[in-house]
Length: 147
Image (cartoon, rainbow, N blue to C red):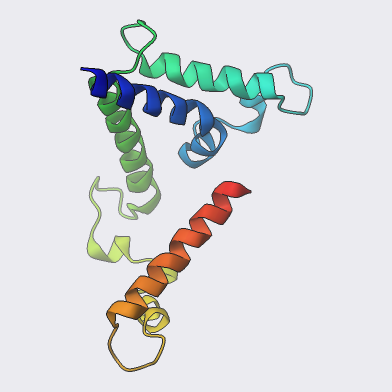
């Protein structure tokens, strides 16, 4: 039982700490929503209040703690929202389904990605090239979170 409480506490802290970046990714909250007093700036207090609101929304039983079930429900709701936005954005024929053609994205062309990963142009991706690309992606992600 203590382990699940510890995990919930860590998750709760993560929700509070990552409020702004998570809201930006979700596209659920914009600057004007965070700027609760309309001053043109988001203060630390406003960021903290937004984090508390996100926590409260996830804490469906209102007991001040997040259980694994509440965290799972929050993640599922986010996944549902993302799926709906993806479908809305990419479903060219508006049939409620995505075909392989609709999923094609020139910026995510597999051939371009392969060429980028195949650093030595050998026609294959070695374990070292794969790990190098993975490390670079991780570094880019860390830099974007730091900014």
